[in-house]
Image 1: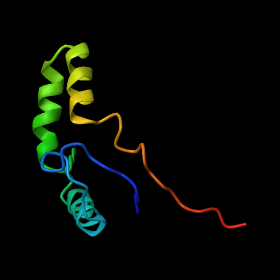
Image 2: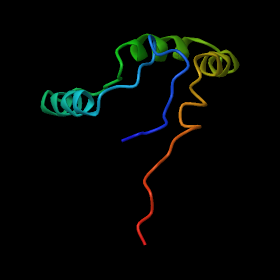
Image 3: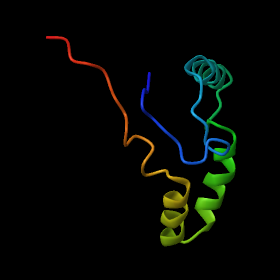
Length: 80
């Protein structure tokens, strides 16, 4: 689905299986869950980002490679 999507730290921000993500989204909808962050490590990162100054949040995002996840994304091939 996201061929070419890479992560700098796969243990912290792994590329998730689409079926797992779909199942978690459906579960969240059925239980009226307000927020869903996947993988679970994102709850910690989001909390940390909320208490850090903006510039430090940008540094954290850069360190984790958040701004380069889709650099090698292939996308769908066009059908003429």
